[in-house]
Length: 92
Image: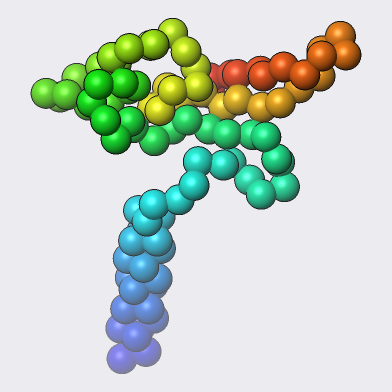
């Protein structure tokens, strides 16, 4: 009986954790890093940005821009030669 309760508790924690991960979250990677944004959410509109279409990953308008929805880039504010700039890296 005790094993059943423990197994049920683990299963419940797993399901609740997965549902929490599916909830919409802001694109910021962490609250301690201001100016850091990861563009890992698909574009809500099909006329701009990256999204799935007929089982394929497609992009419309401004596809070379790393700061569009769904690009997968992480961009941050940096200082280079005394000037503020954006640096974008693709992880994965």
